[in-house]
Image (cartoon, rainbow, N blue to C red):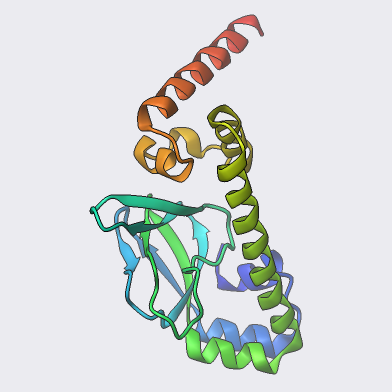
Length: 198
């Protein structure tokens, strides 16, 4: 998928001048696994729209331990820190796998947001979706037992359980890596038994 397809097919933008302006600003950028493309304390100057791969948002506590705040894996997801554009990022953003992004300059993109109602609506939808997901995730982490949090992750992040480091997922789900490992082992066994019986 290229930038034009992302804006038209994925986001449903139809205004020709808007799409043309976005395409002129956009760059498709490939980032190798392990690339930190925004560091805590930096003010973002670019918008990263995920085309492929898996990215992680994380912060480091006073004891030096890192905590996973979010995963981005769906095509079209804005991969951005949870703060306003003029504030230093509270977390780091890193490519967990080889990733591909459509990258836009923030300042010029926001001018288009304020100019084109279609893009204003998309921007509002991104904010609403992010807030809804954040609130739902907090509810899951605070109110569900470990087994149900694991099941929620399987449903909400299909395919990631075997593609992402145990330590990162365990941090995100507020459980120990050992607990997560036992649950993954049980999942593998149940899937294997299902294959044998099919």
